[in-house]
Image (cartoon, rainbow, N blue to C red; front, side, top):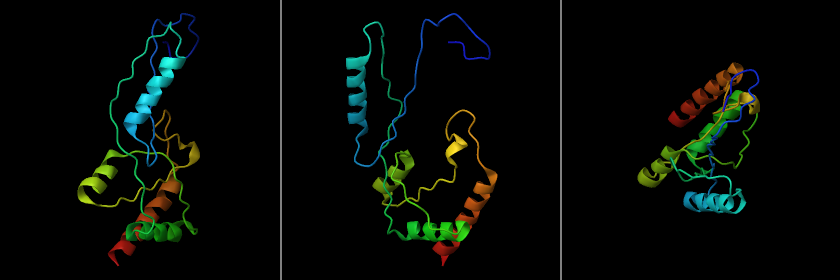
Length: 148
């Protein structure tokens, strides 16, 4: 439908939506897709036709907090921010992370540096530059600690 500024009184004949399911460890992408389809089958009105198209999937990852890489990142962040970082178990799937672990046995360090209102991966995404610069400082400490 019409998404520009101003009003539009005509309803579109078609609408579409894209969904992204962020998995957490121990969730299976195929099972989640099946549950989504079952929900739509049960709850979508008969007047609506729908299809689910899968574009990509990747398993969630869970970092080993005792890893020397994670420990170095924790030290780097503490040096830059002045406080120990907080771990949050939240959904996210980065295909390369699971590939590195499964295929090469390499642990990854997943770290974000955005603020809650940065609208990451959304319209009007932004990044608070002072936060970004402090994150760069944390990365410098991380690289120094890893090399030591």
